Image 1 (cartoon, one colour):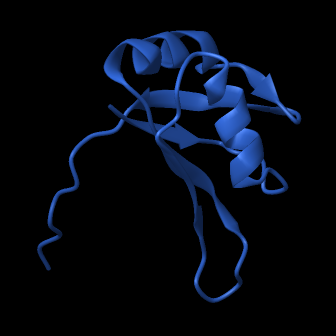
Image 2: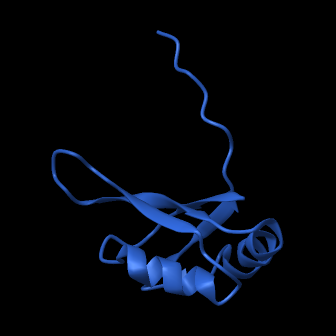
Length: 84
């Protein structure tokens, strides 16, 4: 399952985010989105985990305060194409 994580502290690194989620089960991938111009975190990212572990992580981490910010954690929705 792909998990969307927002309100990630700008100083948090991918390995720290992965470790946070690993307490609920195996993390298959972890990516914090980086701004291509500033090279700084955009404050959100994605974590992939097996379904059961992902559900436990969503329940356990949504609203949890990390480095002074309350994480928002939910199942990622499929990407939609933008129409202009």
